[in-house]
Length: 227
Image 1 (spheres, rainbow, N blue to C red):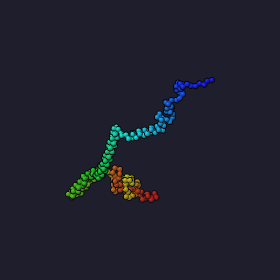
Image 2: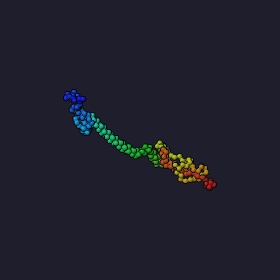
Image 3: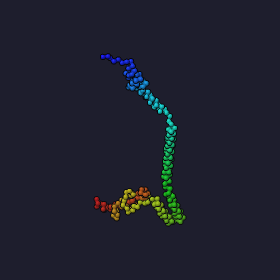
Image 4: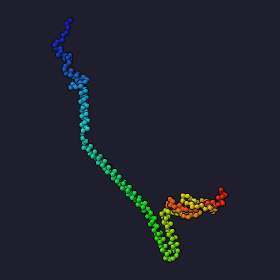
């Protein structure tokens, strides 16, 4: 049997039998780890990382735009205005505190002014009574004048909410009475105020001076029987 020998033209008729140079380049380009320019993947990654770092640096070095500068300037202006308002508020508060303390001190200093104004007419009447008694040479005019003054003074004290503590015949109360002594008595129950030696007064609900009183106790005979 005769062996078949390809003719020289067979290579031209079947070009796929030998890969061309372009095909080899295409295969090498598609092969993992190679690029179209013949670079490795590590070189490409390094270039990409360098590009990203350069972009970040450019963004960081970028100057703010006009809108951002306006916004910053606006915030700075508002901050300065707020600081001024805070300082002004502190100054006004300090002035108010000083003014309030001054007014309070004046109120304390001149609190009795109204009472003193009402007491002056009483002093005038006393002086008139004394003068009248000295001219007439008698005590009748003085007694009448002093009686009028006492009534007038009592009225003025009541107008200023200063009232006498009624103690005569009342049950002894240590909050408004001051017992000077105990007097045995069979006419009233024990612990009853039978005599007032000095009247007491209160301003509103506060006792200015307690009434000095004598308080009844059991008679001597009843006291011995009770023992």
